[in-house]
Amino acid sequence: MKRIAIFPGSFDPFTNGHYDVVQRGCELFDNIIIAIGNNSSKSRYFSVEEMVTIIEGVFKDNPQVWVQAYKGLTADFAKEVGAKFLLRGLRNTTDFEYENTIAQANRHINPDLETVFLITSPSLAAINSSIIREIHRFGGNVQEFIPFHLSSLPSKSPGPQTE
Image 1 (cartoon, rainbow, N blue to C red):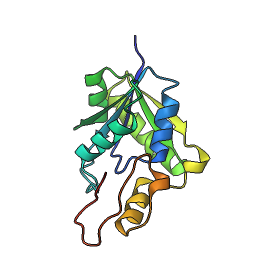
Image 2 (cartoon, one colour):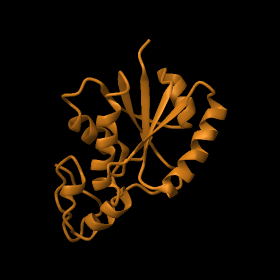
Image 3 (cartoon, one colour):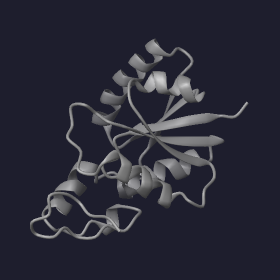
Image 4 (cartoon, one colour):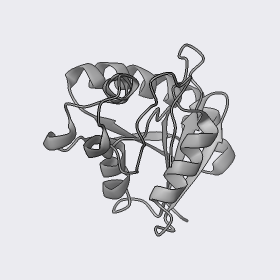
């Protein structure tokens, strides 16, 4: 039986930290599904569709990695795709407290789902998607934080542009 893990998140945007977790996860699992959910309490900077396309491009040469958007509960999505593992990255103890609570809830909903935590590589731990969005929104260069090319925003752009 294949060991399938889902790596869920909003990935708004997908960062080098996310990329690192997926690459390291490929050593542990046969397949990783990068599952892009839409957090109803957050307004998106990049559309889900844009991120699916971008992330598929990042992993185009890695057949172990799939990208899929989903709606609803992560634990239910895991059942739908036959994933027994949930892959998560931890930057710090604050992340652990938050992720632990979610892992317990997911396990309650789907008792067959095991959460696996990978500690973020130290060189990538200080950055997150919120910081990247803010830097980009104000015209800063974010290329060193993301594994894809992102053009700068024009001064009056209503949203991000990607190439």
